[in-house]
Length: 124
Image (cartoon, rainbow, N blue to C red; front, side, top):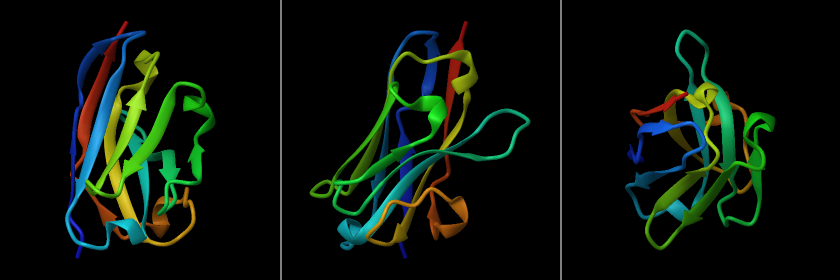
């Protein structure tokens, strides 16, 4: 069993930055692929970014390319999402997800473990 706890959400003005963190329990964090997803108000949850178990491969949604960066520190059992140049349309609940895999996974149906989510609100 893996438990994921997100932090770092909040209220920020458009153009600002936030860094989300996701701390994972367990000793096998380095064998998990990790992803970030978000659910805007009134919409379905969508893919944001994902990273392979080693951190050597990443994938970003087109809507966040050039603005968001996913990274991980396996020594700290933590994955990060650095969000720059935030826009009002980035407002959403952001979820961290994990699954045992060696590749980058962009489909939320492939993730076995989910955090509780953290709210990000970008004001215009």
